[in-house]
Image (tube, rainbow, N blue to C red; front, side, top):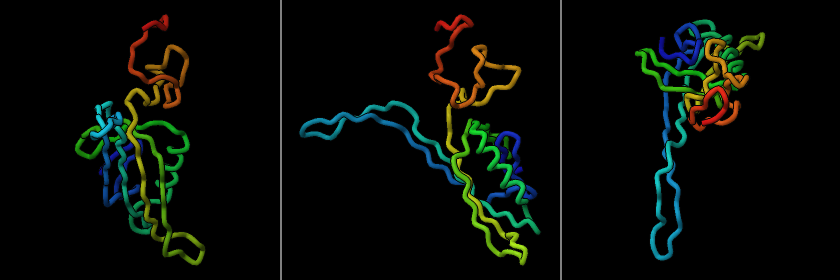
Length: 160
C-alpha cells in the first residue's frame, strides 16, 4: 500500500502514484502603516494541499475503475482521512480536483495510458463525516457543510 484515502487504497493494482507534492501555508493578517512596512499577525494555519500524480495503464498497472471510484468519492463532497503506507496520518482531506489525460487508445477508443493528478485540500478533522456510532445529536450528517466547526464543545442542550 502506497497510501489510503479513507477506504480507497493507492496500490499497483488500483491507482499508483509516482509523485506526491505538498504545499502548506500559514495565514497572517496585515495592517497598513504609514511610512513603515505592514504589521502582520499570525492568525492560524492556511491551506494544506497535496497533489498525487500517477499513471494507470489498464493492461499492465492500475485500473480505470479506480479513477471512477475517486471521482465518485469527490462527488459525495466528504472529507476523508489520508494515511501513508508507514501509518502516518496526514489528517482529513477533501478531493478538490481530479485531472486525467488519456492516450494510446485502442481501435475501440479505450485508453491504454491514463495520467492523472488528484488534488486534496486539508480541512479540520471535525469535518470528517460521522458514522452511526458517533452521530451528531443535533441530527446533522456531520459532513463539511454541517454548520459551525469552531471547535467549541456543546452539551446536549446546545449551550457552550
